[in-house]
Each structure stands twice: as structure tokens, then as C-alpha cells.
Image 1 (cartoon, helix red, strand yellow):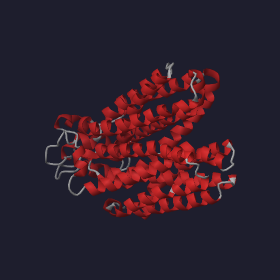
Image 2: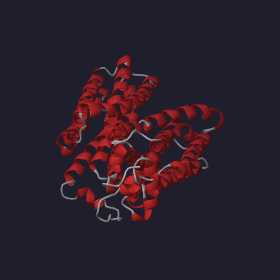
Image 3: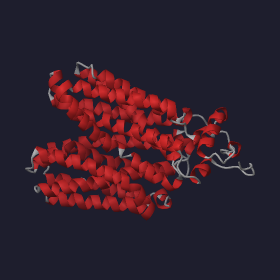
Image 4: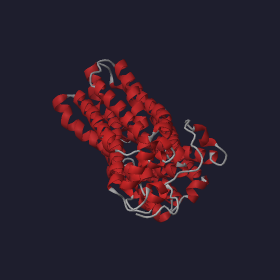
Length: 440
């Protein structure tokens, strides 16, 4: 074993070595958390028509239920994210998983719409806390050369979870009813939470700032780098502030970066959730079949998986700013194509697939950018608040789409309007100094 001739930072230990089994387990559990997050977020929309009949209410009354879930996610992101910077990533990932798993189980026994609304609000809090902490922990265990790829691939969990939810619903719904889908969606997160309690390591970057957790850090260092004396691994000389450092997001030198990160987070999720929520209805207005609309949304999710996987290597190869701007410009071109060919089913499905690649690829890239802007001491706060702002966009997208349809906008006008948030997002990315500087 080497002699402690010099001190090492935690990231230097991780960056200098290949991925260990411990790191692989940590990233895999974070990925599973993201998949189940996507499952629970999307499955309510798939089951709404059947649930409405079972509860004896019109399906149109489920709008507040959808909104309650998204509002809960916003609350969870901006509260449970920052708490992880004080109490640890692992604890909050486990807690968040238990919250949305247990409440999904309870949802299976809801018998009234008001019960369902409250349960979705509370479930959303758990969902909102799970994703930003999983992103933060995965990024901290990934060597810098793989960090963007890991974070971007982690975001595959959302569309994969939605696809998994569709498969589970198709298998269970005809035989056991909608309640069985929520039971599955509750049991699986609880299993992952139990596995995380036993196998998920705490962030070494978090532990190194806590003298009372030193033994835990030493065990992790030995598993990642057996050749390194744990006594050599040090954090910053200053004592960390254990209060939730949300105000630090707007400290001098960081306020503009935060604002210019939040703008594309919001705008891109306006686009993403508008497409997922209203694409079928808009296409029906363009004389397409409902089946074409459903196929378009499914291909959008499939394209999202491909986009998330490709995003990390693309940003490493071409730089973060260039990759994100090119993807947003491609989306604008695709939206113009869709506006002019909304009546052609073959064009619609092809464009929807490509839109999924670029729109969800951009979202994965923004998550990677957030992990690189903020230091470890406040990373969960930074990522959590950015995700929270994005949740507002995810609420706004369906609302804006509904307003445009009530105003009797044509499919062409709606798709052209979708270019506006992309242009605003691109402008913010172009102005963000972090997007220009943070390149491989």
C-alpha cells in the first residue's frame, strides 16, 4: 500500500480508477430508482380511463389528480433534494422510495376521487425526492470521464419506466384490474428501497465533509481503491455548513448560472409534457386516427431511450453547449416538418421518434450540466431545485396545450408554437457560461 505522502480529494481517487463493483452497484440502484420513478409517474395516465369507470366519475375529472401528482413532485424535488445535502443522499433515496412505494400500495384501495387526489399528491412528494438524489449520487460515483454518460443513461429510466408500466398494465389489467398495477408499482419500489438500505453506499463526497462518518468513508475508499490509504483522502479544510444551502444557488458568481439553468429546464419540460399529454388529441384534430397518436407517443418514449443513451458520448465528443444547441435546433426543424405534414401518418411517426431522441436527450444533458455546475456540498440542492423548476414546466405544458386546443388552434399552429420554448431554452444555454466552460 502506498505511503500517505500527499493528500487526495475523493474525486481524484474515483477519477483515476476503473469502475469498481461498489460503484456499479450504486449506479445500478440509482438507475432502478429512476425506472420505478418513471413507472409510477406515467402509469396513472394509462389507467385513468379504467379507473374513472371503476370510481363512477368521468375521465375528464382526472385532470386535478394528474396535477396533484405533479405538484407533489415539485414539493418533493425542492424539499427532499436539499435535505440530502444535510442528511445524505442514501437516506433520502431510501426514504423517497419508501414514500412513493407505500403510497402506491395504498392507492390500490382508493374508492373515491378525493382520496385518489390526496394519495397522488403525497406519492408525488416521494417521486420528486427520488430522482434528483439518484442523479446526484450516480454522478458522484462515476469517474469524471464517464459522468455525463452515466447521468444521461440514468435518464433512460424515465421512458423505460413508462414502457415498463405499459407492459405491466397490459398484463395485469385485463385479469386483476387497475388495483393490481398499483400494487406492483408499490411493491417494486419497496424492494428496491430494501436493497438500497443494504447495498447502496453513501456518497463519499458527502462523507468526507462529516468527521463523524469517517469510518464509513474509509470502508468505501478501500473498496474503490485498495491501493490507497484512506487516511490520505481529505475534504476541504473548512467545516461544512450543514444547513440546507438553498440560498447558495444565488450567491455571487452563481446566480446567473442557476437562472440560465432553470430556464431551459422549464422550457424543455413544457415541450416534453405537452407532447406526451396532447399529441394524440392534436393529431386527431389533423384527421389522424387515435391509434396513430398513441403510436406517436410510444415512439417518442422509445426515441427518448436512444437519446438518453447517446447524450453522454455526444456531449463528450462535441461539447455540452454545442450538443444541446444542435438538438434544440433539430427539434425546431422537426416541429416545422410536423406542422406542414401533420396529415401524413408515416411522417408523424418518424418525426415523433426523432423528437423523442432530441427532446429527451436535451433533458438528460441538462441533468448532467446541473451536476457539473454545483459542488458536492450543495449538489443535491442544485439538482433538486432545477428538477423542481422543471416540474413546473411539466405542469404548464399540458395546461398550455389545453388552452391552445380550447382556442381551436390547428395542428400546424400548435406545433409551430412549440418552437417558441425551444428558442428560449437555446438562448439561455448559449448565454450560460457553465455550458460553454464545462466540456471534456
